[in-house]
Length: 317
Length: 93
Image (cartoon, rainbow over the protein chains, first blue to last red):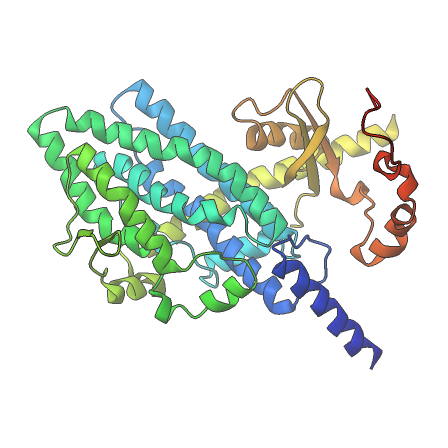
């Protein structure tokens, strides 16, 4: 019986900590469901950063100037770093890096559906920076105050770097908009393809989001999917005007009464199809990740062997 | 193959400040841990010095010990300057 009482006391202490918006730290007692929810969210976030290197990484060799190559390389390197910050945050909850990699490769853990869309033109590099990273920032800024300490701290580092990502994308598009008619058309075409998938990044409508209520009660999430989506639309419309492009939504318009933009709904059937593995690039993304993992095996093995040899030699001296 | 050991990373952001814990990473040995720490945690001049420590070398107070371990300082309020009431017109105190 004592265990039950102890457990109740621990649960009460956990609830109090969350209620006063204080942070939960790795060695604190936490409900198993909280632990698994944070692991699921942080791992999914980490996988998104890592898989997110692929669509843009493909353009590093084809970027039109040394300056653009250097910028893109730095951005893709940042995404790898963001993945690492997040993997280490998840590991504090007792899941190993290898386990997460395996769950990604076998489809048991997901990554953001946006990365299952291809980057077909160079303008997509700009659009991804502006809209995809812009949507990510909307999602991530409130996560700096999430209830799980290591996750919040990782988000603070990420948000600082993410701002460069968005600005380089917007600047790239601005440069193309000052170019030829063909370049301007390329930007508009790219924005048309990415607008709806960017809105889907916030997840399903609140009514269909099974995890939102519990995640908000636990302070893991602080805003609902629809709140963040609205915020993103409100931010993006004036940016599109300044750029000189339009969004492919006939319902988009200012609502004086609400003080927000009205907008149409993305195709949620498409969203669920992509989440379930049937997007344009799902198979390709995982195959690429698997290849990178397999091709890197000899590096991991060689550096382990080197470390062992160094240790042995140090012992003999 | 087993995973590379875990290291905790501490960065001194500038001269005159303490090293502060910034996160962790896996590496096969100490030297690689330092190189990885540079790449992962200091891509934008975030630091002038890095420490890496094997996580297994850290002994931590457990949250369950929180009360007995930190309680002795709780009842010694006379250790704080605000415990002493002085007339407000005494200068430089």
